[in-house]
Amino acid sequence: MKYFSIIIPIFNEKNNIFNLVDEINNSIPKKEYIYEIIIINDFSKDLNKEDIFELEKLKNTKLINHDQNWGQSKSIQSGIKFSKFDTIVTIDGDGQNNPNDISKLLNIYFS
Image 1 (cartoon, rainbow, N blue to C red):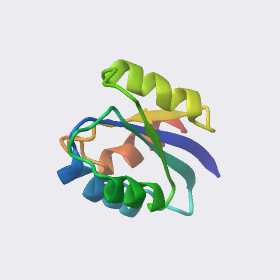
Image 2 (spheres, one colour):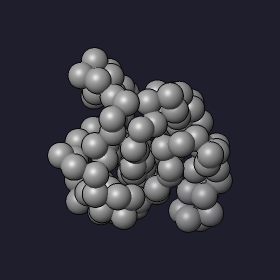
Image 3 (cartoon, rainbow, N blue to C red):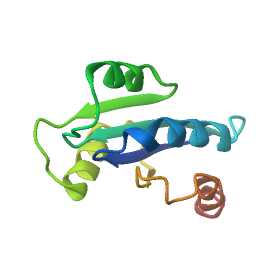
């Protein structure tokens, strides 16, 4: 098995993040990989307590909440700090990156 962490920094991405996590979970071959998804909420204004609770319940997902807006680089750093695997993949929370590309990238990395 191959292990990795996916880090997703978000700021006001409520309309994207739930679908993005679903797409990631549906695109990663479970027979080849064990992974975690780390979402860093960089003090989003569009997430309420229910949204945060729902994010925390998502499969393979950890949520880190910043207490102020630190920016994308600090969010990625927070995700790396809390990741349990050495191999890290980052993806934006806005849905502009194709989650199917993660498997392609990993196939190259692990070959």
